[in-house]
Length: 251
Ligand SMILES: C[S@@+](CC[C@H](N)C(=O)[O-])C[C@H]1O[C@@H](n2cnc3c(N)ncnc32)[C@H](O)[C@@H]1O
Picture 1 (cartoon, rainbow, N blue to C red):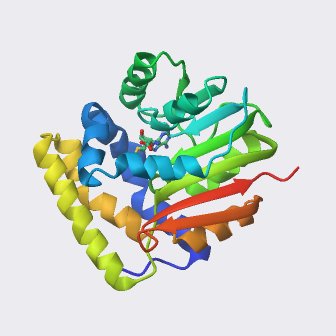
Picture 2 (spheres, rainbow, N blue to C red):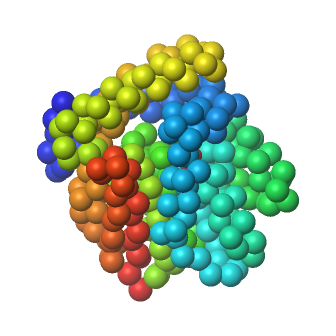
C-alpha cells in the first residue's frame, strides 16, 4: 500500500484510524499491559533490550534535568534514564492506567519514583517551557503525531531536546513486504501465546496498517522541522525499519 502524500498524511491517518485511536486502543493496551514487556521481547527475537540501549545511546542527559516520557507505557524509558542518572526528575504521561500501573511497579521495584499522569497526550497538561528533555518511543503510529510533536515542543524549555524512537516505514518495497509478513506472524504468535483478549486480537491488522500509513525516517525529520524543531538528526537500523530522531527546540 502506498501511503498518501505527506501534505495530507495526517488527515488521512486520522480519517482512517480515529475510531481505533479513540475507542479501541485503550482496551488493547489494558489487555496487553501484564505481558507487554515479555511479548515485545519475544516478537523482537530478544532484541528489545538492544533497541532500548540503541535509543538510550542517542539521549544525552545532565544531572537534575526534568524529563517527560510521553506515552510512557510500562516506563522502560524512565527507568533506563534513572539507572543512568538517578538525579533526574522523570515524569510519565500515558492514557492507559493499566500500562502505567505495571510501569509504577517496575520503577518501584528498583527504588525509582516516576511522576505519572494518566491522560491523552494530544494536549499535554504541563506549562510551556517546563522540561529539559522529552522522549517518545513506540507510540507515534497511534497518534496525531504532528500535533503531539508540537505539544512536546511547547512544553520543552528553549534548547530542550526531543528524542524519538519508533518503527518506521522502510523505503525498500521488498523489505517492507517481508517486514509486514513478519509482524503479522508475531502478532498472531504473541496473541496465541499470551491468550490475548478480543480487543487486542481485533486490532491485529490495524497495527500493520498504522505502519503502512506512517512516515519514513526522512519524512519524520521533515515534519519535525516543519513544526519548529532545529538540528534534527535521524539514525536508522534494519534498513529503515527502526529510527531514532533527535530534535532541539530553538533558544
Ligand atoms: C506500544 S506502547 C509504547 C510504550 C512505551 N513508550 C514503550 O516504549 O514501551 C504505546 C503506548 O502509547 C499509549 N497511547 C496511545 N495513544 C495514546 C494517547 N492518545 N494518549 C496517551 N497515551 C497513548 C498507550 O496507552 C501505550 O501505553
